[in-house]
Image (tube, rainbow, N blue to C red; front, side, top):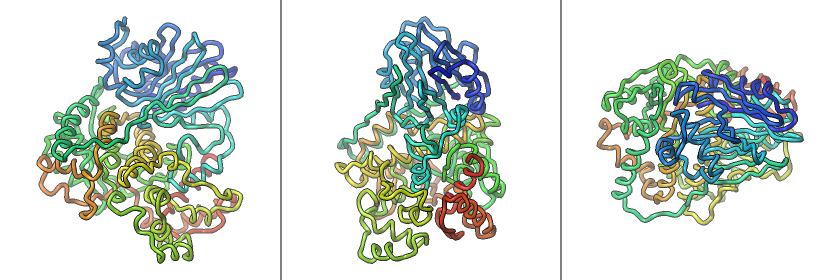
Amino acid sequence: MCGIAGIVGQQANAEIARSMARRLKHRGPDGEGVWSEPGIALSHRRLAVQDLTEAGFQPMSHGAAVLTYNGELYNHERLRAAMAGPWKSSGDTEVLLHLLAQQGAACLNSLAGMFAFALWDGTKRRLLLARDRLGIKPLYYRLLPDGIAFASELKALLLLGKPEIDRSALRDFLFHGYIPAPKTIYSGIAKLPAGHTLSFADGRAEVQRYWNPSAAIVARDSAATVQELDALLRELIPAQTLSDVPVGVFLSGGIDSALTSYYLDAPHTYTLGFESSARSEADAARRVAEHFGTVHLEMTAPQADFAGALAHIAELFDEPFGDSAAWSNYLVAQFARREVTVALSGEGGDEIFCGYPRYWSRVGQRSSFLNRSLARHLPPLSRFAASMQRHAYVGLPAYAAALGGMTASQIDSLLSQDWQESGYDYLWFYRQHWREDLSPLSRLRWLDVHTDLAEGLLTKVDRTSMAHSLEVRPPLLDHRLVEFMLSVDPRLLVDESGRRGKLLVRQLMQPRLPGGHLNQPKSGFGLPVHAWLKHHPSILRDAVRRLMERGILRRPVSTEFRRAWYILVLDRWFTAFA
């Protein structure tokens, strides 16, 4: 896992590419590489995971093709065996380079792994950017008057100058809790969406989707589905331990990390506990570790340093990001990095196995005259009003409300006139992936996989882990498993009357886990924001005051406001970057 950057155009030179890469040193502390020729410069920061010798250094060239690459290909040995070579290294970078030199973007369909890369074709004077199917690895780009620049994180592109803030992106942040691709907080800098490529030649950029999974349901009974799932997990999870450095597993009290640990042979597992036993999953994780015979280590998080958490989150994400669980991810990554360079996690299990409460909460079916009336007449920033607004929706707005942050009414009530836009379509991102042809459960799962997963969950995991130069691999998001689960009827996964999801995984793991493990409530890892604000109300008051002075907010909010953390993050970001 690494950091990549580069630039095409008159500004391109080795020094600017090197300076961009140095802003990504945390992503790759083990080496630095730069390649350039007139009009193009590529750079790389290396986190050595496979082939630790100099033969694995990047940028790597093969004929007229030059590659800078961030990621891991779990099937690279099989791909290598099908090609003639000759080979100078034993890692996956050279395999990817040869494939791209031979097949171009067509080879993406044969890759199993997580990746973001840039390939320069010196013959055609063309740059190819690509991001993995699920968006596990990030990639940003910036169109220039005569070229293009790209990088793993926004901070490297800001070396070329800080553009104006995109005010619509700020509204999107409040609605989603993140800024969805292709937008960023800055006008003129974009995210390459998951499962897409960008080709740049002759001054033109063309973005295309290359991954189009099927949503067709395959008829299977429960027993046959569990058997197929077991076989697939038995193949895919061990394959993701491929590494020349130590590998561990993040183990929480939930089923997804236990599932990941089960298919490995005596792995090293790492758990983050909390001083508050009501929020800690350490005891449950410890029981699973003892049951599986893992080499287990625990860390108890001290009482949260909220000021420190806010400051770090602004630095990590470079733009407003509203998931307070990012701090817990940051701490467990810091803990694990003392011993390992690579960690497997259970991320993605709730999305593909239907584990969120919204799957059994009758989303979009609770609208009534009463809650529609209350939604219109209650103060929009109150908690009760927000609940009524969500219950009043039907169709896509209801699904969006189940997934999102603030409601449109709350945002319009909160922002000053200068930061609003009449008739703004807050649903534009979800609308791209809305499938009227799917059943309600399939429709919600499809939205999860194509929206919040990459932009929210995986962004959080990447930034918080790479801040410590730790590579995190989510085997449950191997595209082969995701495609299989999209073909499974979600009614086999969800018991609406019993208010439970992940039925197939429960059936698979019930006999393999300690007794009662599947019945314990999930506590989550978000910071206790409201308890903190109750004792320190001035923190929120001061944040609101500063945002009002900047002309962004037009009214204060109380410490009971459901999304008060968003306000704190927004204030911290403006203080640090604006």
